Length: 607
Image (tube, rainbow, N blue to C red; front, side, top):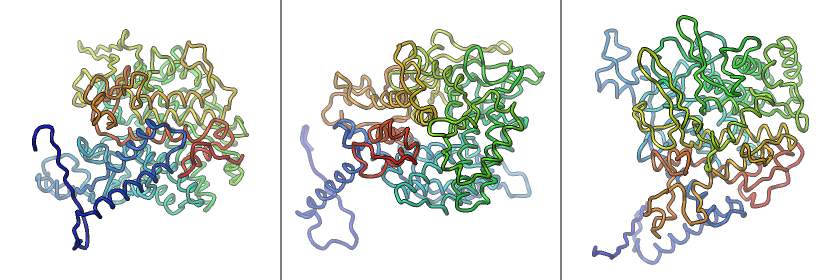
């Protein structure tokens, strides 16, 4: 091909074999028809209020999700045998990676984090993939959730496999969150929920929940460890390895994840109890367990070594040493923001359908008032007589938000940072036996070799946890309503409702991909080829994470996976307004995701 020249290559898959000219006039007709069909499909799916650039971002995010499907074939027993490892042999065989997972035989089409750089599934990534996937392929999304709970994936002890490199690593328990969201979305679309799907998922998730309680609550006091929990190098120590100090960490994020897990299992139980009352007892179990976990983060009485720091108004990990000494590791990171995300709203309609659960829950709280003394009281009525399950009461919520919405701390022009910018001038430093351990604000790549040095939670913006923060803010909004207002940004004097704060964060996240006033896309930063070249400037890449200050894409460049969540967030705020969400609660959110909902938010009934 000569310089500056071009050629066109035509390919066609067909069965049975096309006897006529497969590349004649009919070829162009087929291509045009398929293009027209795709355009019509996305036009119906997207809110009409989207401008041209928003449509481009949304469509390419969804396209990346569909492109991320890949056939994955891995027979671990065979793989171990090739390496001379036989975990069932009577004689000791050489240890091998994943030798505790010989039961696994994976042979399915799975949504990958990144088919180019990470061509294997990751459990907590997959849960976030479902968020945008259900907009276009809910059946596939449901199948993905079922896969991880099947006998050839789920460990006999109840652990969900993390990822190929080490299935025994511990990912955040977000599978139940994705399951209840998928069920409610499906019920809204079809008018009837898939109870069989819900029942099967609940029974398997019960095994996984029990695994967490038995394996990751070291002292039995409802505070959890878990290890790195997907946040890689966010801590001062490698949380997946033995601590250089000895002892163990009580993790604010691990405990918050488990509080959310309880809430999700409670929701699953309530949905099933309407069909089969026996599940009502499980709902009560998870209610009580949530209260105990939430209380453990800030116990009544002497809280000098609890996760909540009253002086800072923030949650921290607690280091428990062998000699009995303990101290908070005062790193202002996403670890301390995740307790915000453990929120669930219960409607009076749901509670009325199962009155005995409400009575038992009231008795439990009255019997153990010390458990709810420092958390949000679940009996308090909110807007439209709703009830809220949350770790944070109103006072703690305001204190956490004042830090999170501070542009000198967590609030970036492009979302919520994983580490406060405070640590740019005030690094956290810990000394032990002449060795220095430190955490600096690093808005881009890591400066340590922890986790290979190629992943960084010490400043960049990550889409999945931002999505959970937006979810939490909307839950708080439908409980508190318009009367709760907070400065956003902190110190600006601008008071906003929690809906408006959630909308603000989503807008900042979307702005990483949208053209700015100068016609540039922040995600491409100084890459002139992608900013200016007419053939590349509209070809978006959905990176693994993003620069905490300028929004530039970092890490794996095609990890549409959980970054594709931006499509769902953009769709939500373009499809429904705060009036409808306040009136209809979560039902309004799922109604807005119906195909053809259009630019104007649908009228949502009070119930």
